[in-house]
Each structure stands twice: as structure tokens, then as C-alpha cells.
Image 1 (spheres, rainbow, N blue to C red):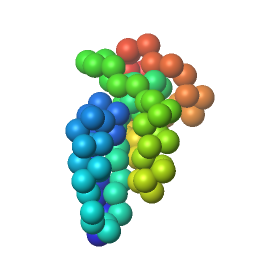
Image 2: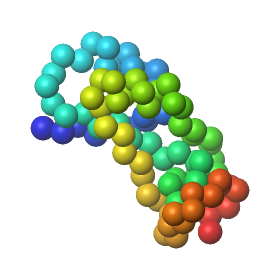
Image 3: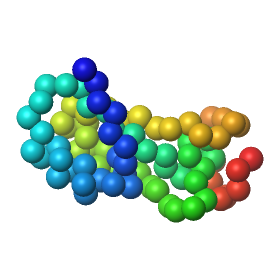
Length: 86
């Protein structure tokens, strides 16, 4: 079974607490909608940035990271978000 856990970066403290006690053998995937590019989240209501330390923590524990695709226009140039949805 695979579990998708929201808040990979915005709720990382709670997730780390959970993961430190997790003893199951199910596949875990954490996800979030970071605001560092227009096509992935593009949130204007709160900043959610990724963190290299968290990325390494998840990968070292064998946990995959997924990103949400919430905007209708995908820009693979990965331009920084201006706060406006294009």
C-alpha cells in the first residue's frame, strides 16, 4: 500500500515526528505545492519553499517527494513565481 502525506515542506515538523516513529512497511510519498515556480502551486496566500535538508532527509529514508500541479499553464523554464497566476 502507498500513503500520500501532505505538507512535505509546509508541515515538515509534524511529518518528521510521525516518520521518526513510523514502523510500517508501506510506501510513503510526501507532497506539497511549493511557490518557487509558476506551474507548481504558484500559491499567493502563503510562501512554501523547498529545503535541501528536508529533501535529503526524505530521500535518505526512502521516501519519495511529489509536487502538485495546480496551475493550468505549465512553464518548464521554472521561472520564479511573481505571485500572479499566468
